[in-house]
Image (cartoon, rainbow, N blue to C red; front, top):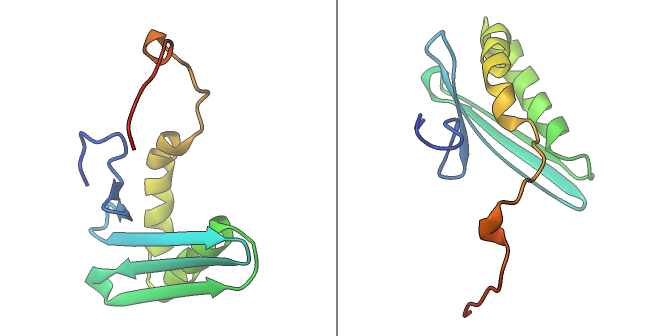
Length: 111
């Protein structure tokens, strides 16, 4: 993780979730009409969990399913992850968009 980035728990397309017990969870997901997927990796435990759905449920479902599977297989995982999420959650809360003066005016560009 990069503590100077806007989101220190995201790197190169992966969620990077370090817990106090020394585990790091890598998470990648995606959803489109008709499917949702999650790939969860806990390298220290040699664990890979893949959740594939063929319904439009969004990644909340596929992510939580992957976390539940990992929590079932790894002792203390659910508790450690829960503590991390309490710290991380404020980073992911939606904030209202506020424009400053740099957004106003005439814009030009090339594609």
